[in-house]
Length: 491
Image (cartoon, rainbow, N blue to C red):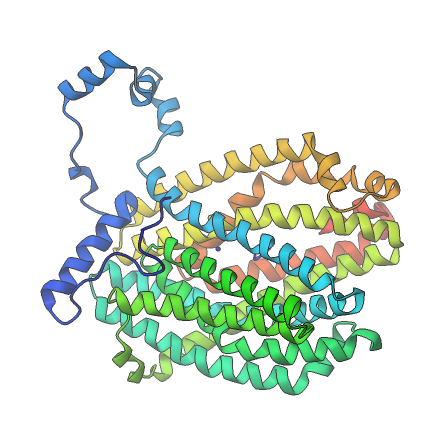
């Protein structure tokens, strides 16, 4: 399914401030960017100096270092435990994981604040957020388009082209964002009814969505800025921006909802303001570091570039639609089996979704590193990096599977205390844990294909997988494996 190290001190803006107006300044930035890229795509990485032998001997006399211990192992084992790509992979992976843990935390806090307003407002906000998510995520193709273009330009030391690619993405994103804002505001009631809004929550859900959609331009533009930073192999700055975004969101949520009593409109205002802060922080960082020249916003995309972008958007929209169809089909089948089965399905889905969000960070790493390497036409390094990413992903998948099996009871109890629901959910976890090690591998390969701009392959794979899933759910599961297990085999 398609599902984002030490921080540089000094607030949201990175410490690098190159001279943007001179050739020397641009050369200096490119050299620094190349150093940050590390072994992932630096053709001269073998020239990196190592510690002198005498220094190693001196340090080993005090304590046996971890590197010395590794040298005692056979070469095949040692090569699988350490890799020249590890530092770069984890430098990208750790900030992305930070984002994964931050978003659910903020969702819990927001739910706790809005939940004090009552059951109806809580349901209205949840439904409105669902509509907002599905309508904005369609434009995630801008991230997919921007990343390889910026990465290729950076790899060729062409910072002007990187700036132009980012600026053109921002122009396209602004047009789509404004159009989405107008569409959501005009058709909010119809969209919410389509998602199953009942009369008791409809009016408050419409209020929330119409305020929430004011941030649609920021939401779409964030895909572009995230893609630009991935092109520069930087996942730390987006994490800083996300922290600032959620800090503003939380502060305004407490003030507008808890203190001023604005209700669902206050919750939507807080979320929208936070999203604009996140975008502005990332855009300011791009400008400050010389990665974006505001004058390039005047350079409009060519018809060929616009057509390529729209075709990519169509392909990814089909992917999202296919995944949504599969999810809704599985949920509707579980719902038809009764409240207990639906509760068990929901609890299991929450656990698996969180695991998938963690594994999704491997897609970010794969996309970022492969796009950078292919930008230098360095396929050998790209292949070696992918191999290492898959090894780390498999290890994490195996570890997660063991944790799920051993802690399935407490994990399910986090979402429900009803014995009947827990009893129905428990047999599902071991079945899913058996296949779970493949999930990070699939996510990493999806990122690799995205980084190499194989969008058609991704779309075809997703549509075929969703078709098989729905066919099983509709045709085979009721006959051969009825119940919740049958739903999850197809899901």
